[in-house]
Length: 143
Image (cartoon, rainbow, N blue to C red; front, side, top):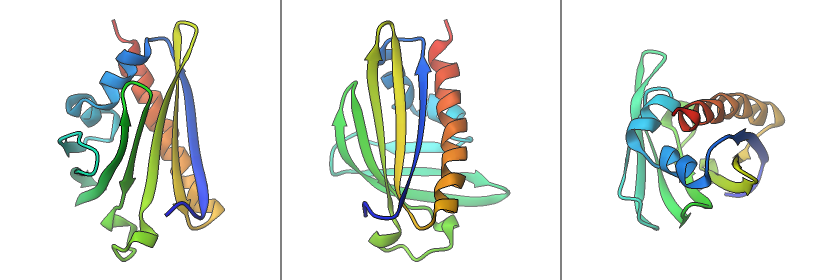
């Protein structure tokens, strides 16, 4: 892990960092911003994290491990999706790093995914993450 190309998506959100953190760690909000997925985790470092759902008509269960949780600043976990068609071995897992930084009254959310095998794969992931962080922004800014 930690090699290959990175995909990074960043958005400024007109909400306090604690509100953005609450959104990204809430299973109900995750269903909305993560394309209908069911997020299952105990939020304990070293513990499992799972995403279940249906993508393009095909059921999936992605999985990872929670590596770091520094509320409300940083969340780091691994991720593997069987839908990738790759073997479920560590060299095919990604690390996703969610960073929340205060910028005045706004929060800057950055989501970085490492270990993309090509620049094209990183660009594809970036497009998906751009959509996801935009949805987090929409949810967090609701009154």
